[in-house]
Image 1 (cartoon, rainbow, N blue to C red):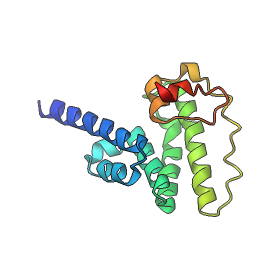
Image 2: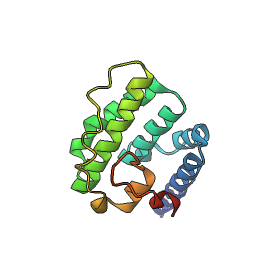
Image 3: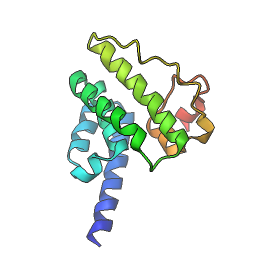
Length: 146
């Protein structure tokens, strides 16, 4: 029973964090994310959101560390479909590029070249909405509204 309560509480917290982040309250979202139990924060999407929030709050060195760790984990993710993994790869590469540029480091190996290979129609809607890849040439901006 306790596991169900913890899962429900974490799900509620996840929604609250996403709500804060979508309202550009990045520092508050990051603070709330850091209070979640470690087993949840280690999950890929929680870690990816942490990196995005670190980037948005200008904690570039931490963001780089988070994104690089996720980049190493990405090929081992079995929970996600091939399309979701390709999407995460493109999103992660964009985040790493932005972070490296903010640090004044070479980001040339992290181009947008792999965006076209991502079939947005096959990507889980929750993944698309939680981590919008607006730089994709086929991105539907109506998705941002609804």
